[in-house]
Length: 152
Image 1 (cartoon, rainbow, N blue to C red):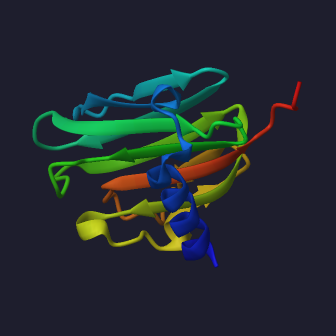
Image 2: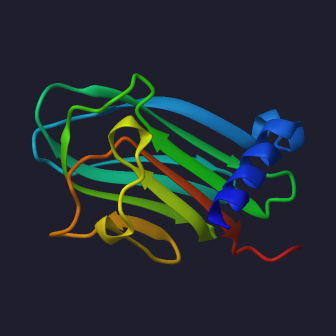
């Protein structure tokens, strides 16, 4: 059922229902070193944040896309490494949306393999690693949230 929802949302996005000015993609560096970093994108009343701690290697180029549909009823947030497999060892991660309630989320490890549901937790507004169960491998997070803003 969740796959159908995601397919529908991506079809929704690619069919042109999402206007150009209601979506944004930006590149950012994911930095190792064991410190906690946060990257945030805002679009109107919505925002998406990605917090993490990682070890190993050097900086990696990642991207965050955020979009809202033309009715402002749904928010989409994707965080991923476009250059393929991440070689970083994530000691924690948390993705958070503001202005919406998560209806669908999937997190992926290397080679776009979904993380086990036992490796992360999903609340109304956050997706985060489950300490002691997370394998430390992260490559992508996809979130679809329904707006919590009432119509005017």
